[in-house]
Image (tube, rainbow, N blue to C red; front, side):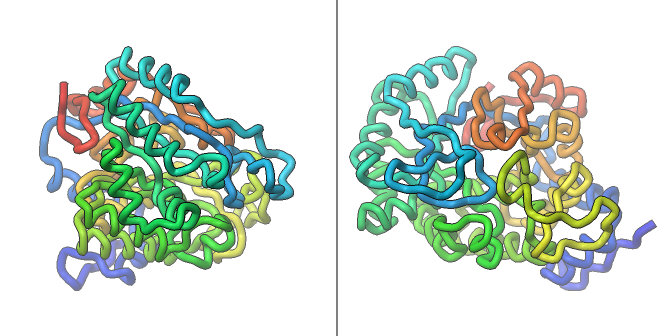
Length: 377
């Protein structure tokens, strides 16, 4: 049986202590400690979920992320990949039809993300008009849209400061920003897996500017590829530091890389019987055990982020349920549409009743929430 390392610096983990916990604690000990943190922050008798829909308004993208099978090359760009899908841009009418389907099942929120499209394909006015269209036609819907890489790309493409971009989008109807594109906030990793997208400083700068304007964002981590455990902890430290500064992160969501037939998934792997730690060079895929360990460590380390979501979308309903005992206080989204992860070959589907049953079977009362984690049922 592993012996949990002693924390000597008070209640807040240092990076060295976090690394020691990862190496020395059993999965059960990590889960116990994470659950204690969750119960301290969320002693209520319920656990939450949200009914929303992912709408990928377009998939044209100039970035060259080797973990993505969803993007399409813009017409004047050739990434050299012949496995990419055809490009599209949804019309406002198509987007409206998707929102109406969401409202029909009691949904309250849309999460909208696209690729990094060139200005000649989607001018800034198109994004503003999209926000105005949604707020005019569906004023009751919370618009959670445009990840930090998208917003920072707007700054570059439209030659406009991030602050001004955010102000104009908010005036047009943007409510909050999803934390997509975080992957691992270590440039050695980002430079290899996400060419042409924000580096660590640019990603955090965009989040900081949104927080300074009073806009909430979520924050994510995609792990289980070429990063080391120390890289993951550096990622956690950077977002904890920014949360200390701004308090703008509403929730943290982590999930495991889904290899599918992506270029990243075809990198050289360690042999199946390898039991050491990742070295930052070889692909080391994360299983359900590793997901729960990292989820638990994240909950313990991120003492200033109020909410942690379960990733049943990548782990399936059973592990998604167990995550409620490993640091998660929220089951995330019913997610009546998901395109990016499914393009890498992972498809799990749950409706609202099934999510409520999962929460009930785990011993809590299920409560539907809004973006701000306030129960609305």
